Image 1 (tube, rainbow, N blue to C red):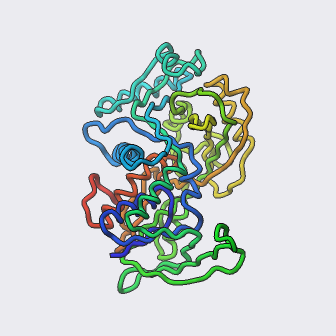
Image 2 (cartoon, rainbow, N blue to C red; image 1 turned 180 degrees about the vertical axis):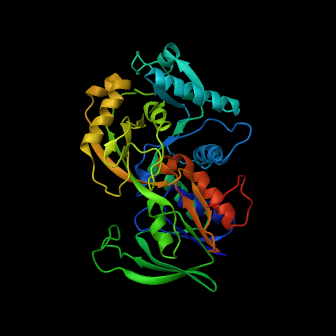
Image 3 (cartoon, rainbow, N blue to C red; image 1 turned 45 degrees about the horizontal axis):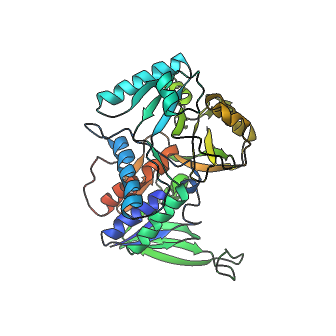
Length: 399
């Protein structure tokens, strides 16, 4: 059996690793470089919460991925900057506190591990926070790691297991044939040194496969359209900023309760995914997440805008910087050393898109992980590999 995986982000490399370790021939096609898109541009936060009594797909993706991060670091020996300290969701207002109480109560009823902590305990857990905050949700299973290093480590392990990863290789056509699938690809030639891309015309060729896994992030819909399939994934721009390296400052990953408490009151709009910060050009809420990297940088992000436009919105960066400063006052005085954007794959119903495409035998999709693709990507790759290799996955999957 030969499988082609389209996309060398965290989902695609995890898929390739799982399949290759099961003795299946795998070729990964990536139009850029490994971890060149959202898998290498995110904040590196990893969700947790615990397994609970009856883990559903969401729990399985988060906790299963967490175990795979630990395996990659502790068992396979890759330095991915893994930190298992936990994540704090900071609470400023009474309405946010009420949302947090309900969220933690539901989580604990399911046998999971979120904790609601008050002002005094929060100050002990994270002394850098504003002392006027009401408290926080503590996710003791929350973690963080370095995005590029993690995705490259998965790619390295996949290669060791026998997978082939072809970068600067764009899929231009996809069609079913009697023997499976045929893909048209264009390969950009390396420059004279072999280390850069050439300006000369790419070379074209065809590639056959028994099965194809589309793990192309926000570009999944474009590939589905090649075979007349509507894959309900859209591009949402996220943007981030970083300070210069600072002395040890943050102990935990940081998020804020403002956005999830607001989103619970927001109804879905037709043609738009849930949990955006903007709708039709108007800000609905502020969103915040971030951490301190092992190199000392503070990295934070927030806005989620339905667009494939990659330019940085400086006003949005400023709003996010102000938001962080309200929760972590010392950050207000820190200069933003760099800013960047990335496109995230949001599904229209907010649920992951993992499964075989109906009426297209041998064609699979793994995506729609929204802003938590890094933290849920490894297990997503493993689950779609289960389907491809005819192994029963631990949870129900369908498109």
